[in-house]
Image (cartoon, rainbow, N blue to C red; front, side, top):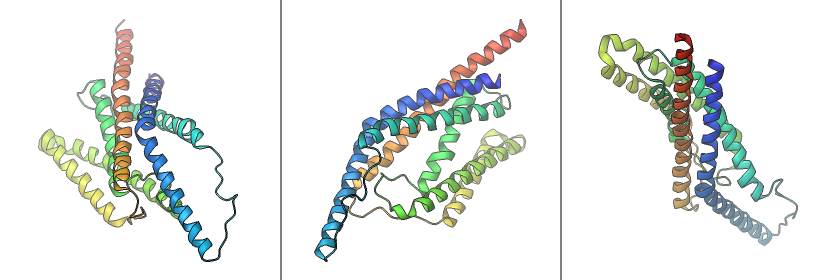
Length: 252
C-alpha cells in the first residue's frame, strides 16, 4: 500500500508542477526578464566606464549556452516539475509515517502535512534568505548562499519535527490546545536563535526596482502555495481512495 500512496504522491506532485509552472510563467517570468535587462544595463555601463579608462572588452565573453526562450520554457518547466514531483513523493512518505497516529481523516492528515512542509521547508527559510531574481545577487557568492540556504532548510525541518514530537508528548499533560501553543513557541524560539547565528546576505543593488523585487518574492511565495496546496488536496483525495479500497478488501 505504501507504494500505491507514493505513486499517488508523485501524481499529485506532477499536477502541482504543471499548475505552478503556469503561475510562474505568467507572473514571475516577466520579472526575471526585467532583472536580466537590469543586469545587462549595469554590465554595459561598466564596460563603457572601462573603455573610458582605457580598457577593452572581448565580444565572445558571457555567451549564453541556452537561449532565453529555452530557459524560460523548458528549463523552468522541468525545474518546477521535478521539484513538485519530488515534494509529492516526500509528502507521501511523511504521510505513511504519521497517518493513524492521530484521530484524523486521510484528507486532514495530508492537508496538515502539506501545510507543515510549506512552512518549515520554504516560508521560514525565506524569512532569513528570501528569493531574489536571477542576475541580482553576486555570482561569487552562489556557493555560499546555496549552502547557507540548504543548511537553514535542514535545520528548520528538523526543529519543526522536534516541535511536533514535543506536542505529542505534552498533549496528555496539557491538552491539545496548550500543547500546540508550547510546540509553536518552541519552534519559533529555536528558529529565532538559528536566525541570529547564521550570517545575513545583503547583495541586491539599491538601484534595483523595489516593486520588481517585492513582486518576485510575493509571486515566489504564491508558487509554493500553489504547489503545496495542490499536493495536499489532491493527494488527500487519492490517499483516502486507496485506504478505503484497502479497508474494503480486508473486510471482504
